[in-house]
Amino acid sequence: MARHRVARRRGLLVVAAGLVGVLTAAWFVVRSLSDSPASEADLPHASPGPYKPSLYVEPAGPAVDQVRTYESEGRTAEATAIRKIADRPVAAWFADETTDPAARARDLVTSAAVAGKIPVLTLYRIPQRDCGSHSGGGATTPAEYSAWIGSIAAAIAGHRAIVIVEPDAVAQAVQGCLNETERVQRYKLLGQAIDKFSANPQVSVYLDGGNPSWITDTTRMGDALKRAGVARADGFALNVANFETTEANIDYGTRLSKKLGGSRFVVDTSRNGNGPAPKTDYDGHWCNPPGRALGDAPTLQTGHKLVDAFLWIKRPGESDGACGDGAPEAGKWWPKYALELARG
Image 1 (spheres, helix red, strand yellow):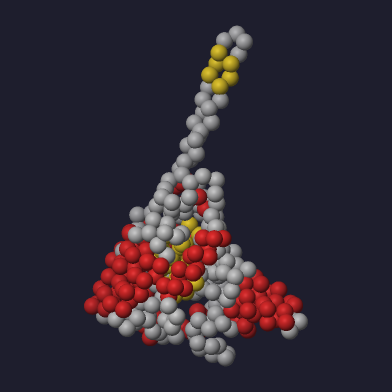
Image 2 (cartoon, one colour):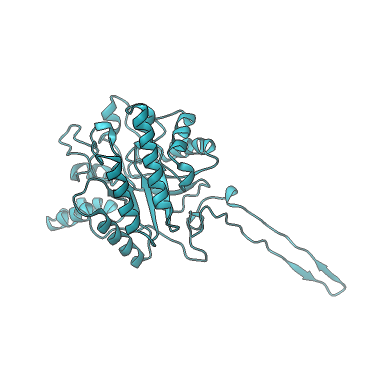
């Protein structure tokens, strides 16, 4: 699959011959990707020919388990609601798991290949992750992180995948939770991650770029993404684990793209069906806010020329953190919130 290939449609040549004489006319209609909506075939590394790739749905996971539990309890309405999550392709997150991440990644891409689908992997283990907040943690040293990245990249070699690199990492660096030395080190590690995965010609890599309500100055965000190596990636990702509307993300992404020479992007639409919560306080705006809903279904055909995909990067129903109302720690399945999202 060729990186950022420009698709063109051949024109139509119409030749008409008359009895009295011969009249020949030709029309050539050329339409470049830059003027047409994005589709599956326009993705970086898209396969040639009529084949249209689609996203991989894992057959197991907390949402699938929850459906079975509700069905066994005779709670049909709840099971039907959670199927809206269980039956959708969602990203597999690689963070601080105790199991072998390379083996898990290999199993994921192998299963997806058998199904003829594309899996989405999210890398989330940068040192000083989340600036010590609800999702704090990550690798303890740069060397540990580099080795971790290398093992996963090697595990998926030769397979197709979409890789999202380190949600929040660039935006938090811009926001100022790191000193300059730490910031330089972070950008270096992000660049290494991009290079490791981009070395696989079948992987599309997107560096996280925050969301429209966070670093609103696209010049600042664009400069930071450049320092982190976005030019060597396939583009950037927006709205990961957030709730900003798809329209707002496309507007912000388009403006940010102009700062990056026309870079393409993907949008996390997993929980933005009702848009963001009111900004009553910091945690309340983004950490398991009530009244939210599932967003646009994951797809590689967005209808927007710069948007490669709508993805469910954040796994709906998994907590943003222990921020009240009985919420579990970040990343843990929370049936109550999953039902709220599914019911909208």
